[in-house]
Image (cartoon, rainbow, N blue to C red; front, top):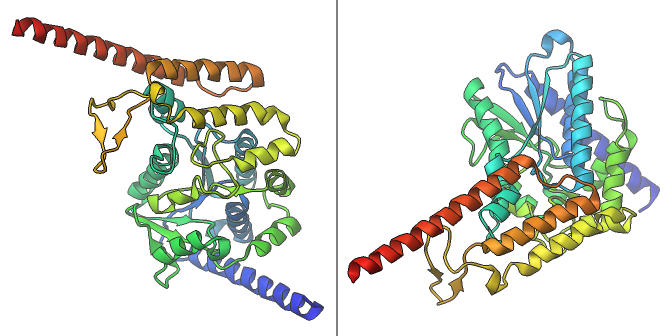
Length: 384
C-alpha cells in the first residue's frame, strides 16, 4: 500500500467515526426518553461503543443529559480469571468517573441465578459437559441474566434501546446475524425481547479501525486501553460478546480464540487460555488440565446414568441410545477435584451458596431414588 492509499483509508476511517459520533448524538437527542443499554463484554468493540457514548455525554451540557445509559456486563461465574477481573475493574472505573462527572450512567454486572450456575447444573444435576449439540450453558448463564435486566427496564420505561458493538466485517456469521436484524433503519426490533430496539453504531467499522482508535485515544473515564490491548495480545483471541438472543449463541463456543468461560467444553481447545499460559500465566495450566478432563469424561458410558432426570430413557429415531446425567459418583469426583483445584491455584472457583445447592440437589435425588425403590418393592409384594 502506498502513501496515498494509506492516507485515503485514514481519511475514510476518520469520516466514518465522525458519522458514528454524529449518529449517536442525534439518537440521544430524540424526543423520546427511552434509556440506552450498552451490552458490555469488556472486549474491543463494546469498549469502543462505551468510549464513544461516554465521550458524547461529556460534550453535552447537564441539562441535555436527560437519558439514562446502562452499561451492562455479564459474568457467568466461570469466566477466564484475567478477563473477568478486567471487566470488574473497567466497570468500576466507568462508574466512578460517571459519578464524578455527574453523568446519567448506571453500571451493572449480571450473573446467572445461583440454581442455574455452571457448577450447580454440572455437579448438582449432573448435566454432561456442554458440547455443540447440548449447549445448555449459554441460555442459563449468559442470555437469561442479561435479558431479565433488559426486560425489567423495558417494562419500567416502555421501551429501551440496546447498543451492541457488533460489526459486519467481524465474520461471515456476524454479517449474517446483522443481516437478520437489518431493516434499513437505525433502530431494529430485537428478535426475542419485546420493548427492545437494537442500535449498532459501529457496524461498518473494520477491525483495524477499532484497534487504531483504542490505541490512539485514552478512555474518557481515565486510565488507558493498554490493559485491554495486552489481554488480546496475550490470549491471541477475542471476547465472547454479550448474548441476548439464541440467534447470537453460536458466538459462544466457536472454533476461534475467544475470551470466555475457562470451563468451556464446547470448543475443542481453549486457545485463549492456552495463549495466556504461553504468555507467562503458568498458574492457569491446572485450569486447562481440569477443563480438558471435563471434556474427556463426557461420553464415558460408566459415568452416565441410563435414565434422564425425568426418568425417561432416550433413544433417537436412528436407534441411538442417549445416556442421562452424570452418575452421583462422577459428580462427587468432579466436586472433589474442583475443591483440590482451588487449593492448588489459590483461586475461589465455586461459591458456598453453589455448594449448598449442590448438596441439596444430591439429597433430593438420593431420597427420590430411595422412594422409587420402596415403591417398587411394595408393588412386588402387592402382586404376590
